[in-house]
Amino acid sequence: MPLIEDLLSLYSVERQVRSLRSRVDTAETYVRLQQREMESLQSRRDELETRKRQHQAHNHNLETEVTGIDERIEKLREELNAASTSRQYNAVLSEVNNLKDKRAAVEEQMLVEMNAIETTEADVAAIDEQIAERSTVLESAQTELSNREAEIADSLATLEQERATKAALIPDGTNQLFDELADDFDGEAMASIEVIDKRRREYSCEVCNVHLPFDVVSRVMGRPDEIMQCQGCLRILYAGEGCREALVK
Ligand SMILES: [Zn+2]
Image (cartoon, helix red, strand yellow):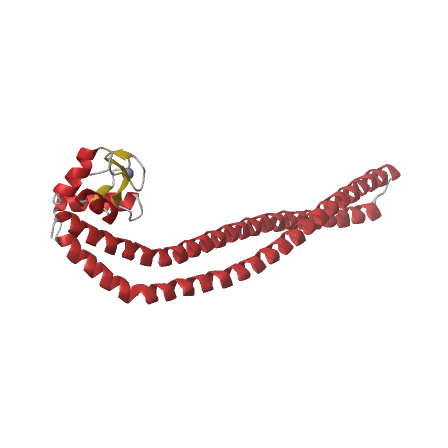
């Protein structure tokens, strides 16, 4: 078979392989999207947990401070009872009152911290709900992906075998060119020649519409073992039925 026929045959299998794979690709993309969502939820949860621990630690320090103040006040009360002069008594009393003010201030801070802890806990609970919902979605997306993979596995193996057989008939350099074009254009490595005006010998690339010189067209027709690429889109040119009819008549 001429090279161009072998290439067209490879081209046809290539497109079948890609269309089969695209069914899995969509499912795969969806799974990845869900995984990213899940990771971002998890990292927001981690942030909240860190914040909560910071508030708890601060609150704990404040509790310790209150205990210290209480102990100090207790001692001062004993001093107050033992005070022998009113001057001494007043000095101790003033210290007690100062400490009481300080204690009230610390307690206010504790209230702020406890509110913050509660708010953060509520945020964590909300995130946990989202995580639970997302994990249900992720699970079903993964199941869908496995199902699709299983569905196409046999056909894909057969097609890939077929593709390998077809590719083996084509010289290495041409194969490489074909693969590169197929990757660049999602399988559409080839383009047929379109007849614009037979009498005026006007032809164009069916894909990119670039005008093709008659010289190129006649080489594609006359030398089926040579590769001609479209000057516009670089795809491998072949003569479609319309083109062949136009040239024969
Ligand atoms: Zn083109």
